Length: 394
Image 1: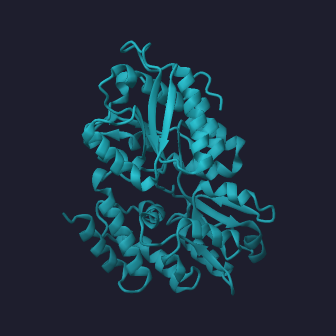
Image 2: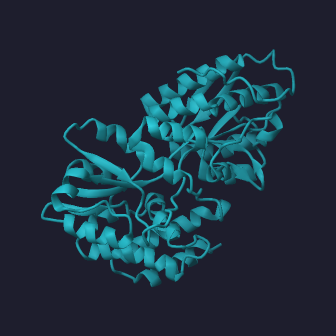
Image 3: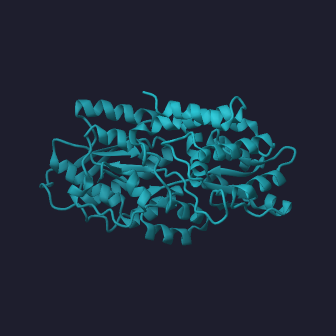
């Protein structure tokens, strides 16, 4: 992968001539993804004059490993983190603020920059990001005479018209994991709800929408057990006409020439509103090190990863959104299927923006409430009251 023009932006700092290699840690264990990131790390390392030794560990193992390495002072020189985890790691004091290297963070969408910020300082930058949007089957909508839904009322009407034996109108991931919390956030946030206070009328209205879709038969009760991958399979196999999912599904969808699909922004409570979706993606950071020279080299590689040309190349490879707004606009013109995601990213929010390290408790409360409400065990109001107790528990 080309990484030209990536060398600048790390300031002067310590002499770095003696550093010939640095280490990098991420969770890209998938063979193709590991290889793709290995290529860009190698190219950026070449620009910085070092070899980058990449190690990838399973997603669930990354943060525990980082915390262990932090206590033993054996952290890598360059560290990738899922953006909701940055707060927890930055809180330990093991990351360095990127402004000390003179790294350029201009032109990033507000939410993206916020995702890498802790207590007012930028500790991580994401070359590319993701969010969720509404996928729809063009042929099914056309045959049913249904327009792409833009509002909640239109979504319920469209889902009902598209439902028939062997096919549901709509599908989401409502399982008992953080995935369903992630998928619920566009409905919560776009309705004025807040993760800091889950037991509000705005939150209840958002959850009621999902309950109504299941109760009416427009959405399968099986969503309680479906992952985002399962939702994709339902859509790809013609068993649902619409789904909420991320752009990482596009490569698989593109392989089926007979599947004609489109993407639109997540429907909002009232037509004309701007959807507020959650921000996904990983940030790259420079941990504290006894060697300032190694930190400087790692910062040069990080700056290269976040160069406009690298961003564009990564986005095209992974069907993600470049983090700089001007690059993202250029990308949307080149890859039209990503336009809805590019538009949504501009107003997207990181999950930790308001709660920081307390976000996981709120996320647990949210997916617990979804399960209780969709099974009918509790009303949305009752379920969200319990969710708030979970979110504020010690």
